[in-house]
Length: 91
Length: 425
Image (cartoon, rainbow over all chains, first blue to last red; front, side, top):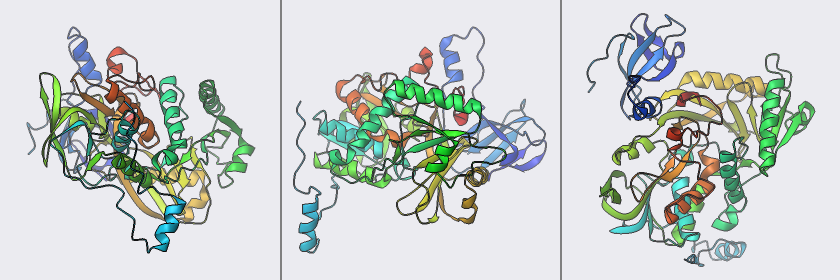
């Protein structure tokens, strides 16, 4: 079971959250072109290691939060509110 | 090119069994060799799972290409080839999927003779239950789509479900069972035997199976592949086929490509062994749960993805709880059984839940992946189509729609219609 540190509620069990996907993809500007939108919708880095992702604390504060989680070890390094940035890098 | 004949010594048969048993069983040989890698090959297949080994077998047996190596980072068959729930079926609704999976099912039906190996293919039927009028309409539509394409499908009412699967609770207050869609030609096969059978058949035609040889890079020159860097040195190749579902993104990164794929966990379970109870495969329609019984007697079952990106090969408890809840809703008698083992495999989840077997922008580099939940039943069909694509440098009609470009072109094969969210497929 993952324990996810919600910036608002503290450490809560994984089944209070919905996974909402890769938080590194950003919606391109409307005139960015087809390739940029293709990458935004479909292309994923899918790293084996640290991954910045969205989780929604649906059974808690209902906020979307950013979580940096390791896809190989399931360790969680950091979390942040939706408008806040995660730390630069996790070793 | 004519297919090179397989070596006829070492053939398994009743006569051979008798002969060996009378001579102290000293004549059996390992089912495949442990060769050192050569400097170069015509084709290198990356990944010694079912799909990679099947590709090597069909390259040799159908296309006569025998200067082939299968390289695998560990021992063969320890990835999803050894972690699946052994189900074989072709009950899809969309023509691109039905065409491909039905071809695969037909190969399963003759696989033991083709491989000279008992893969314990057992066509005991796959039954998808439905729990409402609208679910029945959807099941009927899928069944009709299958029958139009020449695949067997049968709509069963409640009483027919009772007669084929008397252990199911038909009157669950929340999820009463209205009936089921049955594919009688579906069933199960012994997953490890499929790996061993393809490995042995490929080896007998001269394919080198190189275990403990991890690919660390894909060498290219002028837009063309020239070989693979491995933990046992560089191996040259005219063509490289990648069949490493679960880790396809990592290999794609080595070739400078990005894919519409995420890696997710799928768990499976086996109970303690009991006397024969469940004849075929049964799937629950009101939650993600399916079950069958192995020949050893253990009940084999699985369900939904864990739902977040992972390469860890171990699942988590929320899914266990959901899945066992669905199990007991469908078959209350299961509450008395104990789970013996639980494990997880890494799925290549694509953005439309369908796979790809295709060329890439790099000449001589081919990709096979994105199998989502459906890799095991695809094993022979995947190898057959991948071998064709590699040998001819063009897809067969069976896999022509299974490209990576389909996302760009708006030709998704979205069997479930869940949108570009891999964890929701």
